[in-house]
Amino acid sequence: MTDWYRLGENQHVIASGERAFHYGDGLFETIAIRGGEPRLWEHHVDRLLAGCKCLGLDIPRAPVIRRRLDVALGESDHNTEFCTAKIVVTAGPSQRGYGRAMPTQAAMYVGVYPGIPLNKQAYEKGVAAIFCATRLATGSPVAGLKTLNRIEQVLARSECLATGAFEGLTRDADDRLICGTMSNVFIVKNNAIRTPSLERCGVAGTMRRHVIETLGGAGHDVGVADLYEDDLVDADEVFISNSQIGVVPVHRCGGYKWVIGNTTKEVMALLAKNGVDECRV
Image (cartoon, rainbow, N blue to C red):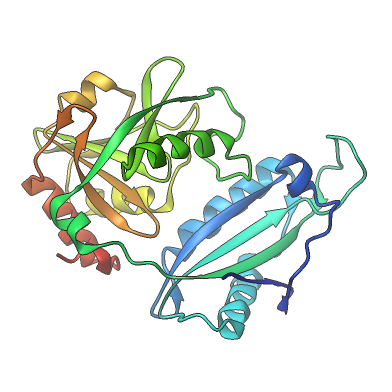
């Protein structure tokens, strides 16, 4: 069960005229709450504010957003030592039609979900993935942002559920590797760590940013590049990242297999020292 709040008050009904419902006009952030605190809060706020600027949505400043989150966490019956919060920002209700004023005063909802920890075996032995048939459209003005328009991910994720795979890797129309349905992907080759460019499509995850910044600060060779299936196949190691689970090794994708090597283990150990306890194995 999810508890939803708006302006600190519990919400049970969303207005039928909400543009989020009709057009997916809005953004969201899914935040790991650990020890009662939102993990990677600054990264989530940065992406949310960037998205609101792109969509022409006026929202309160970061301290106000944080206070509304804290109120929701304080009111919720869920265990806030380990749970998930979701902030949904919408363009609010309006008359029919795609167009609206720019900027528009936004509505903001905060949901609190119970936490579901990932099995430790996934961190120790890795997970299986598939290549999704669903392709991501390129050239989007909201590339990298987490808008409410996630139908491509819905279709791709449904492919995973049909096969039992933990994750599905998506590509664009030009065969570039982009990201997972719920994660970002990293490959390791000769100790160099690369993650796909998301300039054309995909979602720039907050954990992806944390991984890049943490590894770069520790002296690792980490960067962003255009990657293809051949780069993935040729990789020595593969891992994925997600705000809720941290970093998890990938041991197989279709017929391709990888070892859980020393670089991935070093990455996980480094993240465990930098606030991502799930990676402590």
